[in-house]
Length: 161
Image 1 (cartoon, rainbow, N blue to C red):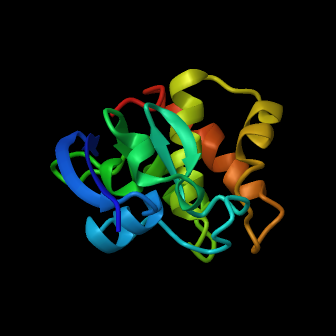
Image 2: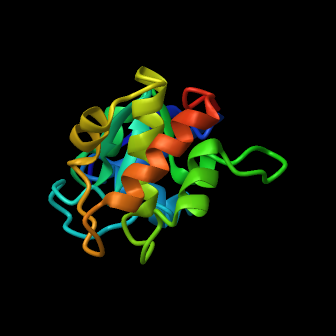
């Protein structure tokens, strides 16, 4: 089996791993690096549950090869909270507004919203709808999720780390 060594930053920490060239990023993160907030659901890159940020852009980790993040910065939901454990504004807003629903899509939604707020700290509702459309929530009509993103924008850190 062919293997390659990759170097990247995972939630701010320099990380070096040797992986088979066919290893998917979602499997590397969940199984090898214990980032269990990265969900595996459709395994085709269409549901959004596995969303992580790669260099601040949302990526479906279930359809991305691990070697594609060599030299990149990868952020999972585990990296959102501060070192002291305090919640990020996105996490706080989801808790306040009930945007977490059953919780399965939440980590992907949090990563999408973090990416959105880093690019657009004051998004309009249509922008939010468009941005989160790649993550399927099976519980709701997205209203509490939209409210959560609007609340995170009010908290105003622009998705900062």
